[in-house]
Image 1: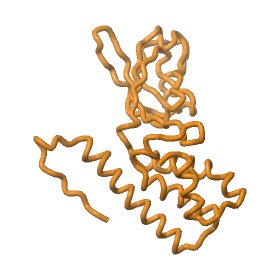
Image 2 (image 1 turned 90 degrees about the horizontal axis):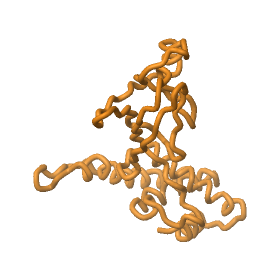
Image 3 (image 1 turned 120 degrees about the vertical axis):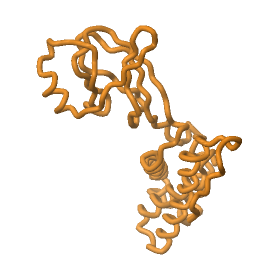
Image 4 (image 1 turned 45 degrees about the vertical axis):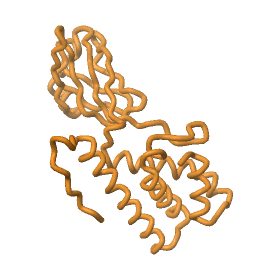
Length: 212
């Protein structure tokens, strides 16, 4: 399902081409994508990013498509990985109050949507590897297909319908139907993310997955 097909489907299901509804379709799509990304951990969106710390700077930039972190590691000579321990900002500030005291980073915290804060303050340029969950570009007129629109069509469609019908303040019975179909489709995605990509059919017993 591409962008045009999804846009047409939403208007057909909702039985409206009212101007404000059509104008907000991109909003429905974005909200649906966010809902799916936050509810499930899909291996297809895992990324690794290599970077460096800056001598004397306690901040480390996040990638522009960053959604959540799996791990943050300092790489030493010989490709030795030392994984930094996640903390909150108050811990970093209390544990390393003197920013003139530097060393190899041992902890990190989410400072804001754009930066991590490291502790202690790096005393040099350290190679860093961030393994993270990414947020792909939204489906749009200029980005006509995405992984969700191609591989998770049912979940994506019904997530969009839930958002669209919420906007229309539609009947509770129809809303409940769309939400149930969304959850059913998400069950298949959960099976894919937990079982299918981690199973070797030659070595592993077939997984019995609960049906809705």
